Amino acid sequence: MTKSLAEALLKILFLWCVLAFETSSFFLQISRMTNASSFELFPSKISRHGNDQIEIEWSDAHKRMYGIRQLRDACPCATCRELRMSPRPTNLLTILKAEEIAPLLIVGMNPVGRYAYSIEFSDGHSSGIYTLDYLRELGRETPV
Image 1 (cartoon, rainbow, N blue to C red):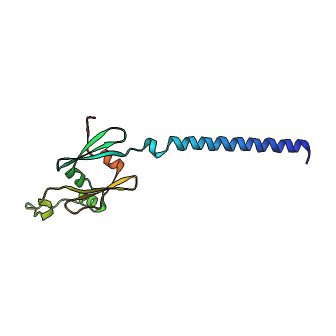
Image 2: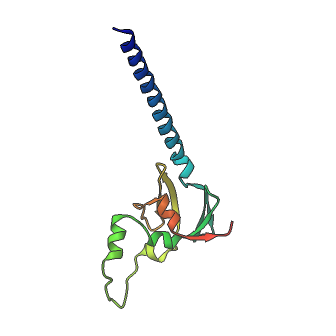
Image 3: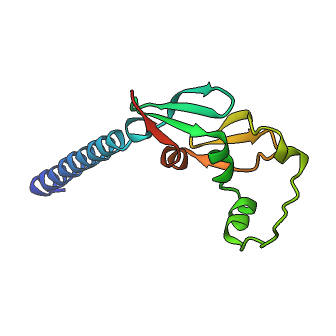
């Protein structure tokens, strides 16, 4: 191999290494900038207010108040979405089930991965998965 060819190959190898390093540094910076922990909102505190409301304090210090009935009525499961979309019967007399007469409570609220909560209500319903984005949309802002 001639000296000029070896020098040219070394230059190409050097430029390739510099480009690879800069590219990996660039993607590392992008990865750090878009890291879920830097932009993702998550509940930092969940507290009960009486029997009919909960308050969620979010990681950005915003607080939202949620009515238990509001959460139940906004259940995102397929069955509840379908019921909300279907036309209501025009019966004049609605027959209530026993669980509809009792006050509605949240019996359990458990995280689903890092993206949602499953809420179990006293009427036995627990199939809705409330994403953090959806929870953030619901409720009303409360003063900090």
